[in-house]
Length: 199
Image 1 (tube, one colour):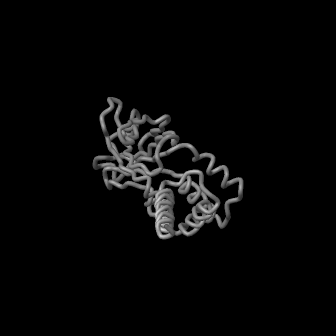
Image 2 (cartoon, one colour):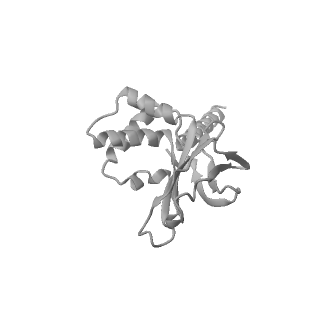
Image 3 (cartoon, one colour):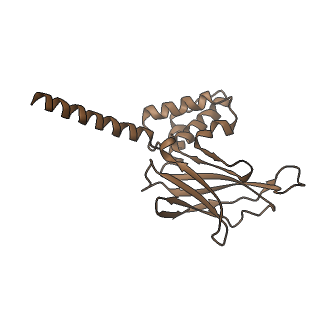
């Protein structure tokens, strides 16, 4: 009887470890004080990194076809800490709370795309594929493209578009696909993200 009870307790403990491990691998939302400290430390350590390297963990890069990254609460706070460190400063409590408030409750993707005219992305929208569900973006911004390269080759323009989605109801362990579409709803580019691998 004692042996059976011990076996049961060990089994329950291991199940608990599995649950903890799964949660800790999920995309961080509502950062704990320890996670806030980790984000700030990551930001301070990244002052000498190029931005592309700094955000690599949160990015999907398709080279000349385009790239995208998602701003999680962790990345938002880390980037704010990096920018402060570049000015030899530290974030104060207001800066921290303000940064987290602006990123809380939403998923924000920035997409870099290339085109042949300065307004090529004007009518682009995006949807998020989550399992069998398709969620439209609730807000987006497609600024005019800027000259790219030597201006003699195609594509000659580049733009950074932002697409916002509500975070509520989306599993922080999910694998999702961001799909950028033209005004006719045809796919322009898609970017897969594994939330379980992100901080």
